[in-house]
Image (cartoon, rainbow, N blue to C red):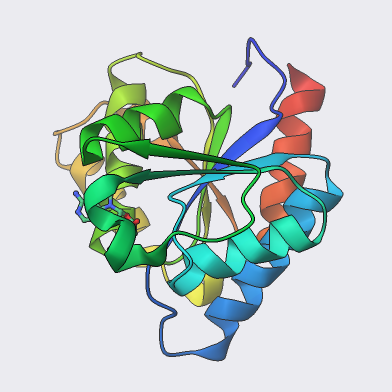
Length: 189
Ligand code: AMP
């Protein structure tokens, strides 16, 4: 894939829960650190809970700019993180997702739940419609996302998506691999 802009800001989609295995938190913490060390800025959903909070605190503590975007109705549920470089409060979920998209040059997906799936599939379908060419990188922590990758292959193999749509997702095994992919995208552009 060739990109028109250098990736400087990455949006991380991930769970508002921690998951029930320690490696989910460990990888979220590592990703925040690696985003900062690579000189990237982070865009995310502004919450302090779950993996979202872990990535944001780690990125911030290691010196990254962290831009949080939250709809007003989730302020109490996802408990807005203190100390963000920028905080945007939107009227609704649609505005939040649009702003997260507009402010980011690439997306990294850690383990998460239905909200994470919704956000990831939306970016995939917008890419399918040629509305953007921003990379979508799945961090397949301990094969967490393998069922999603298999589902996408199944959709393509049974004729409900074009074969090239099997390539909408780039896959990394871990945060180190995800940041290497970002660096490769920037080198090859
Ligand atoms: P989850 O993966 O369900 O823990 O949610 C992760 C993030 O996705 C949270 O900040 C949710 O607010 C957000 N999210 C985005 N779109 C949706 C949606 N359609 N339904 C639920 N959560 C969503």
